[in-house]
Length: 274
Image 1: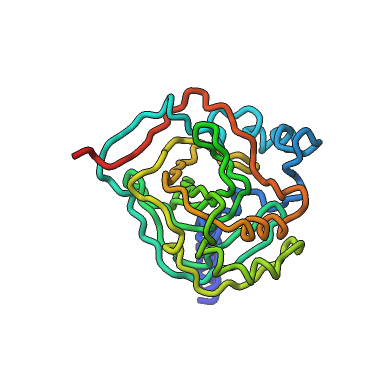
Image 2 (image 1 turned 90 degrees about the vertical axis):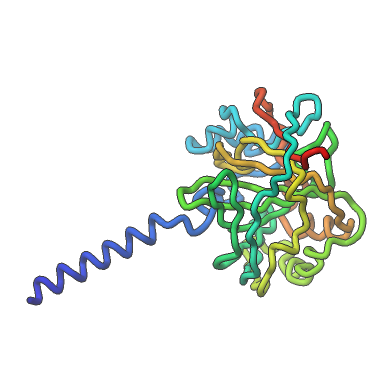
């Protein structure tokens, strides 16, 4: 009887471990967290040009054919006219701000909702900021870009991007300003941000660019679905300065250089003409 109970307990432990290690609960397995292993210093020993040589598992950064960011050029974009809005089912959830050294990251600690793309559901995991923008439109560089990173149950990645120009203060960043200020030059610091509603991040769900690319930090994982909102929103100069001051000096300009598009499909989704 005791033997059977012991076997049952071992089976239960094995099942729990299997569930824990097979469940894609975060994007940490996708994005490197050790920011000291790479930086943004152009021409430096661990700068963007060298990322693919630092580790074998980062080789895509140098040799991948679907790397991001890219220039969203109107000369090669294919326009798809429809009234389709990508399904965004976000909801308020507790979140934590983290100074990762190379950026400020907002990690939702639970179910913050999801998006649905081509019948695949991607759960919202985290957001982070780049300044200046990583993606460009017809060569135009914007003052800031936010990436909302999503993960499907089978570890597929989708990222929504919103571009910003200097102008009126951004309401979403205004809510986080005090917490970000407390993290200046404190790499690794975590601050509870409270309940954060991702729906407060304004974007267009009917007008956006879409292409297949990669993560813009090591390991530069490819087959990432990118959706870049056509709506350019505003951010104050003070907020951009704050995000730059919070990170390490080498990451004050934490934008990866534009990558070759290699003639990838670039689609612009817009409402159908009437």
